[in-house]
Length: 148
Length: 148
Length: 79
Length: 79
Image (cartoon, rainbow over all chains, first blue to last red; front, side, top):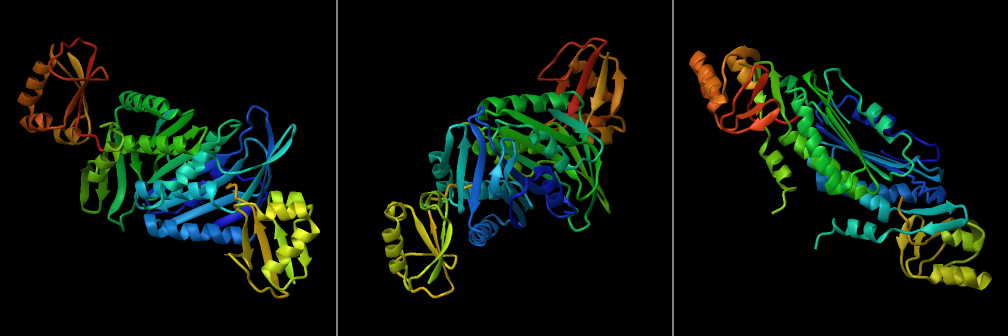
């Protein structure tokens, strides 16, 4: 399931729901991305998505992850709108028979979400705002998954 | 924090507590290992630890992870005693500034817990019980972290 | 005619994010946007800006109809 | 004299998991365990069985005191 939402969410509530009644799944990996205060330099983040298009692009990546890692299930929740420091921005959970697949799929989905997913992020500081682009490290991270 | 406990736990409750009030941590990875029913072949697991010793060995591994991955914080909860299918056996959460460190540390800790941590696991089936040892894959997984 | 959407910094530069504009191809639409606002025109031609027509990424020229949705997407920042 | 703990399959084989046994070295303790229960003796000598003295893994012989805790640990299964 892929969900974009404006309201804050509690990652634990999502993880509980995702783990419930899984009798045959051995492994659940999750990742939660939190907004950093950067020692007070960042007052808030503001995230923009393209409704419909953004979910569609994420769904295509999820389909790749299903095939590539033998993923059984996944749950992706992404905030849009204004996000305060300490709040969760993104939650990804993956379920698989064994932990290697669950970890790798979660890692892969996060690398995609952080570098290629259609979001536009504004950092709001005390002295104005700036649009953020992926860090060099994000490009390095996503490149790990490309077959040579 | 490292905790061995007999009572069942909800992984989401642990994740919520772990993520709370983190203003400067960008990344929280988690892993939850669930007991599989194996199509009814496994009625329960029974896990034995050596109280004091087991926590001490896990703490040493956690110290390695802190140094190696620049981990800021970690939370490890492990069930002991009887565990029913679908219940969580182990929960590991890691917090770091960036996601690569959080993922790798969580992965590393799980490989350790699944192959080297002092636990003895009995599978209870309809036709008796058997003591389990790490799978070949577990040995392969842990070997990834050894410097050549 | 098309519904035009601007995302990220493009919306800030233009001062709008959603507008209906008269044009029957992507090329003519871009020409009209450049003409109306040279600053936005510069930003639209910058490297890394992608175009989605009816929520599908496209390159080159395409015909537009009254129900077309054209989105200009600056480099994505990720979540 | 030592408090002896058996884990995993070793406890099942012996029929006990915690017992105080008279011995002043690890070697003498092992001899006594083998003598009292040859089946357990076989299992204790199997490859992969480790010995912890006062919660520290040790190899070879060590002296024991009245407060020593000796644990025999079969191959760990992980969690």
